[in-house]
Length: 254
Image 1 (cartoon, rainbow, N blue to C red):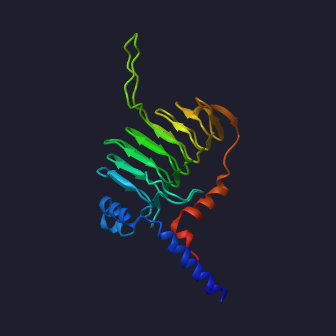
Image 2 (image 1 turned 180 degrees about the horizontal axis):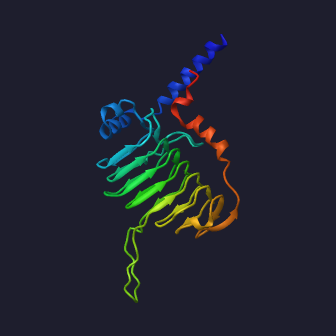
Image 3 (image 1 turned 180 degrees about the vertical axis):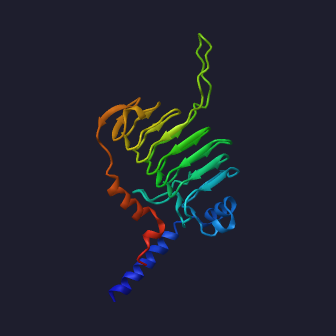
């Protein structure tokens, strides 16, 4: 009897979860961007409302294909309601090296000839934006919290009004492996973080921080070194991320 009740609850939870999927956008995206053999496995899920501004670029999954391994608008945070403002524009190249998640109400823009790479279990929280005009790379387990923004461009050219020198508009952004970026962080062109780096809330990143070494906390406006020998407990966190973010793991006992 108890096993039967468990199975009924599992079936209900599974149905409730899959009702959150935007099946029209999910099917459209997968069959537009992948060969049929890959599309049938539905590696990309869209949850909630989303506008496809452009899908003319390329999308590659450089990892074993699994159902729902990439989630746009995936419901993994405390907030439960979509504002309905999520938007995707892929004109350049997007490469996924494994599982990856966006939270709700994201803005994801990749310009023509630009390249974005997401490491395994990279993630970007709700109400965040990623704008790539040149090159952006997130390492394995690079986790970015809600309300953050990543941009590899200044958008508008700036000049020195005395010398006439033109400042660089675009520069790569490289987020290292096992990074935890707290909420409301702004990461601008030329920013590079080392592996096992934690970035405090409300921080502005503007340059290469790799000289600080691994296991560091940086923060401030602009960011500076705050503390050495500190890291998120990734061995503990990795098990939780696998349990709660991999779709098949949610129902493996079903």
